[in-house]
Amino acid sequence: MKNIISKLRFTFIFLLFIMSIGPAFAQSGITFPEFSKRFEAYFDKEMILDIKKYLPNDDKYLIWGMDVGDFSGDGNNDVAVSIKILNEKKNVVHPFLFVDMYGYFVKVGEFEFPFIDLPLEVGANIKDGTCYITQKIGPSNWNYYGYRFEKGVLINSEEFSSQKFDFYTIDKNTDYINLKSKEVIAENKTNFEKYRNEYYLIPAYNRGRLIYTGFQNKLVIDKVESAIKGAYFWEGPKDANFEVYAVYDDEYLYFNFNIYDDQIIPKKCDSCIGDYVNIWFNTNMAGKDVSPYQIKGSNLIFPANQAKGIYSFMLAPGDFVDIPSFVTVSSNDYITSLQQISTINIRTSSNIIKDGYNMQIRIPFTIIGIDPVEFSKNIFQIACTIELHDIDNEFRPEEETVLATSNFDYLNPPTFGRLVLVPNNQWFGKCHNTYEQDILQTLLEYGF
Image (cartoon, rainbow, N blue to C red):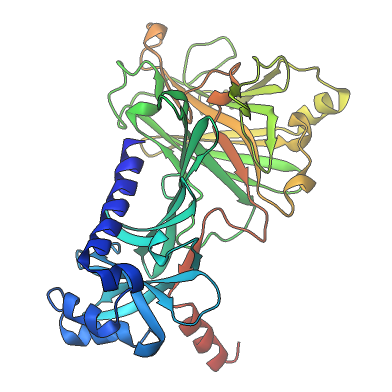
């Protein structure tokens, strides 16, 4: 939260700086020749002219915001410019993003953001390797969008929103690179935090779908904040960490785990001590927009401990030789005959890989009561947390470390992470390939 606030504070300071330059700039922006004079201290004239060729004619717009910094990760300064087109009937600002490529500025992003009163309400700043576009959407409400340029792709790396209601302010942040989400609710009068939750997101695409550069489909859990138990005994990623991929088809949900462990103690039976993975679902929290709370007036309401709808899949590796991997399914809900029959379609596997082991599981949607039709057109979320239970000494089970995708208590709905099921016509996040038009043109020239 402090990091988010500092980013917004930086934006506000930047906007105030612009407003303090002079009455003409504060009220009406500046022309490109004025902009050019300011930027001659940073770049030679040829590079400034690179920017000009992507913008309208000089007499058709004014520049209301600008910043310099590196958001492409190559150590060279890039540029963000926000313009307002004169005589445009809509209240919109057009931010342009430019990257230094071999001494030339190339446009990698162009957007359109509405403003309420002044074009200054849409600003751009470059910080910590990211270009942030900030947008005022209400009297005390703001959005910001973070962008990075990597391998020819402009990636929407994160999004943040701050919305002020009568009694509470809700801040939400989604990190599309690290697949992490944070939500904070604070009282307006006291600024006291009533709720804070940080959790990881597991995107699941249709099985066989090609995932393009810029979109993430692999979640890595290797940070100390993910050690919800036994952090004292955890010696860092070399001790234990895991990667998880998820995909789906019309009938099944698939998980693929790469578990890196310097001391593998395989769990060979249901009651044996050893390493295993637990997949938890809370199907009470499933839909297009999953929220564990309600705001009614001055009351912030959370659901009571869930008496049903919780499912657990305990996946153990076996001994990788004679004892195969196995799964134990449990639930606090009534299990129908259809769900019982569906368990025979669960499949698991395990094998040794370099520095650890791999486990896979296939779960029928019918077991957890989810109909794939629900996410055929829209992104669908399910409350889901994955735990890795790591034992380094089977004679000291009390020294177990648990790494999880959220600060997890299975009976407490707000502590679950999320599984994000993405339909074929959508993506989790946004990206734009700078070379898309060139690639299409080349393909057309070759007759494709």
